[in-house]
Length: 451
Ligand code: ADP
Image (cartoon, rainbow, N blue to C red; front, side, top):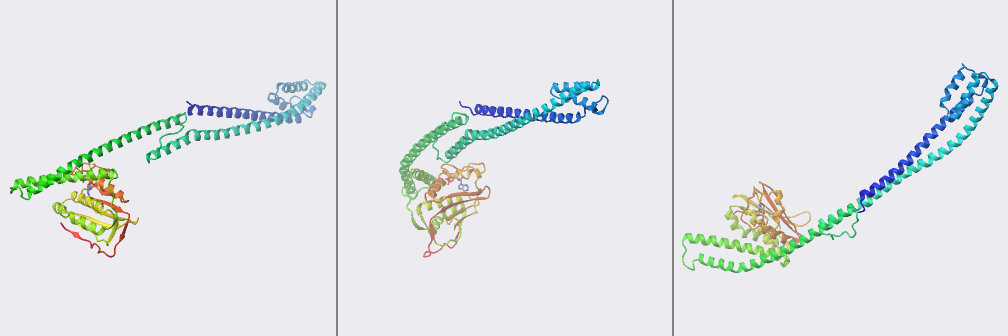
């Protein structure tokens, strides 16, 4: 495996090793240059001061100073020459002092010339290695940045793009050539993970399809006998087979209501199966939306009366919408019947139709029931889902009405949703994108329908 860690370690070691070596050479050159400068300055001072060889007598200030310079001189040869000269001065050997003085002055002049050349050389060396160290440092930083960007940042960016694609179902889960390092391993793991999720999803889709087919066949087979059972029950209640006593009549009413509920459930399942299989064509045309609202309200008067709930509609101008009116009525009826079902007795359900700021027809059904917990507000639009929080105990229902409503509104190009505060009520709304005013027809004056 071409590990990023190993490559980074090698790169850092190379970079640090080279920079440290060059910095050390630069530092040594600088130190040598400073030493040489000190020695040269000292040499100039001594040479100036011993110019007057006659003044070099023991006990004088000059003599003491010369003695103090001795330990500072480098190399040892110079120190020795100075000591020899001072000894000759102390011994009062004038001839010997003259010879040693001449030799010292001559050798110091030689030494100064040599040191000037040495300093020139050290200066160039300092400049050369200093620049090289600086350049290596800069080059190392750039190389390090390039390496991290190419080996880590860029592949991670690609991985995160693939993840976002995957999230939005646009993913073709293969990295064509995942690299052979740690990030490459992550990419390969993600490949396998995505592949597994996709194949699981495909399996789920197949199972869901099989389940939907089974449900639709079973529902179809159930509907015919149920319709004839309902017919027979209705006939019996009309007294065709003789007069029923009160108890039998009650039992027949219960049986008939439950049969109705079963038929509704079966119709819902069949509708949903058709919508999912895209076999429910919409018969869209321009229809009066005002009439649709009025008919829906009228048809729910009985239900509202039983629940002691008032239906109230705000006034609206005469409007038409491009829609399948039966299906949109199904949506509105479902929202209204839910609102009635979940409203306490004596409360009012409001219907409002207006144009929103996206120029769509917006229909809102507002109730003052117990509301829906935030975590359930999205889930209730999925099939067979009901709000199940403690404050919302299961009520009789199938959990299909909103799923069908959502599918129908989606098919019309609109959107459906809910705003709700638990304990205060809910506002279900849906939109229809294509609408227009119709001056020829009467407006809905804002009816308060008391059940
Ligand atoms: P059903 O009413 O047959 O259960 P729906 O799909 O119409 O199926 O509704 C799903 C769930 O959404 C309901 O069971 C209920 O928990 C919740 N719900 C729908 N409308 C309302 C409402 N107006 N107030 C409170 N809860 C509601």
